[in-house]
Structure formats: C-alpha cells, structure tokens
Length: 156
View 1 (cartoon, rainbow, N blue to C red):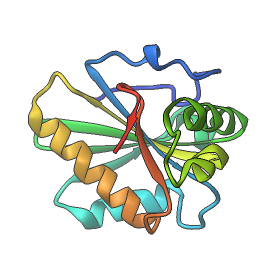
View 2 (cartoon, one colour):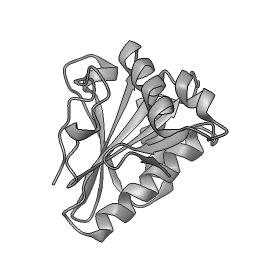
View 3 (tube, rainbow, N blue to C red):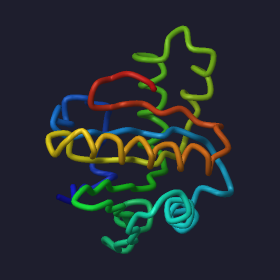
C-alpha cells in the first residue's frame, strides 16, 4: 500500500493529524546542498535492493513530488518539504519536544525536512523498511539532522 500525502497541507503543528496507523517521521535539517529529491532517490537506490520511483505531483517540487520506495509488498513514501511552514513547525517541535536536547537550537532553525510516511498496520517489515530509508537519508545529510517521529511525538 502506498501512502499518498500532501506534504505541505499542514499549517500549524498538529500531531493529531497523523493517525497511529500511519508512521510519519520528519528528518529536520537546514540548508544542505545534497538535500534534493534526486539525490535522495540516488542514495536510496544505492542503499538496498529497492524499487525507487520519483512520482510527480502538482508540479511544485517541495509540495508534490514524492519518492516511493518499494521492497516486496512494502512501500514507504518520502517527500521533501521546505519553506515558512516547515520553519514554523520546526520551532514548535523544538519547544514542545526537544527541551534539554543539545541540538534543540538546530531543530528550532530547521527550514527543510524529508518526510517519511508508511503504513504501520501493514507489518513489522514495513517499519524495518522505513528505518532503512531513514538511515540512508541521514547518511545523505552527513548526520547533520534530527529525526522526529511525528505520529508519536518523539525523536529517534
């Protein structure tokens, strides 16, 4: 099952907009030259024996284009989101969920993010696929990022 998502639909931080059956992880970062959908797709293709497809959406790269990673019957969607709403939500995430973290200031300033979405109800293997996707994207960013599990309100 492919989870289709409008990655820019949110206007304020509302963790309740993600159901507990949908995993949504936000990899928060600031300007990073390697962070494009094309580079992410290439990193994901190199990471494992997955099928990686870039699907066009509404023609605005940060809002519509999605990478779909498929491994067997498991699918994970990845979007790249940036702009004022991302900055606003990053600041809110930092205040509400990153207190005491040494990277709280960096989280608050994050202006871009990869959004990983997947179906938690499918099976544990789908969670494993999402973890491998998250790991490949963190490596692409050189580790200069923070991963927030939006569906449960915590960092990994």
